[in-house]
Length: 448
Image (cartoon, rainbow, N blue to C red):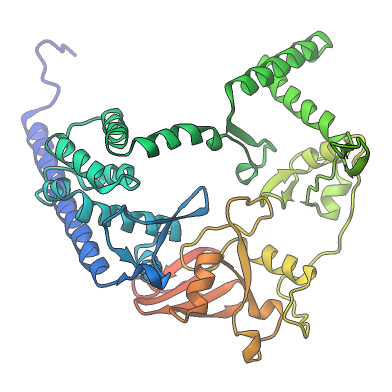
């Protein structure tokens, strides 16, 4: 083909391409208009659900799964009923934390960033960008957020996020220097070190991330680098990155092998001893997988509820000092009620193995014991005081927020079969089963 004389598209193709581009542009315009209409409606809806500060029912933000106690929007914005936000979040198909944050962004825009809000309603600033700007200003005092709104609104359509962050920092420093200094001092409190066991898969690896003090980070880097080098000198043929990961595990095992003694600072006498390694791996392996050496067998790593190879389990259980405990198989649909309100460990284990997360529509808060940032309660679906049994057939995990919503009577639910729940609320009905949440007003329920 002679690209110098032959057109890349014939005239008919070029015309069709232009038609498609025009169609895409029209779709985007309609979507933008609908997004603006939705945000406007949510702002009006929120105005119908304002509560007093004294009521204690206002929605608050969560950070890293923990309640901050801060209203969903900044000072001067109205307080919104948390129960109402829960109902809206279910309607929108959002988790509780996501719903609170989203409503807060809308309220922040409508009441504290009026210039940016007006430009968004006019279509001059994309909805997603305006909401993200609102997310950065919630902690600012009223005069500071006014400063941001005045300087930001005319340029919001093209401003970068680095510029937004600098403007917010400047506003805080100008109008609340004490808070700015406190924020600087508290930066060290945001240090963390996370091991994400929830993402562990069949390959048997886990992801680690953290924010450390610089001096601690240098010490850790030196220890891991030195140990990785020694492993190579001792004959380990793995790549350097792999040796570094092995070195981190060896550092951990060295520490866990020690019984740490706590001494009285005045007398030096040992007051208590912290025992060493007590890590529990819950692994499910069938008799077939135990008897065969095939690496194609798939077992279950219950700590993270992910598949794992039988060969990986054999490697772990072969580690020196490991104790293997074989537990009987649980019937997840079994019924063994007790007379007391307190839930025995065997029933708690059965329910959490059956339901892996909060059973409220769209909620994803895990029941896993490794979930450090939030937790689920086991709820008596029919209250124990009203004759409800303490039995797996009358128990389901609910996160704290949705447990409060159910207890307050804002929404009700019942168990249809073990692991399948029908929720009823002011805005509709939802079916929650092992496949997810199904809006019964939007789609036909799955076959039962």
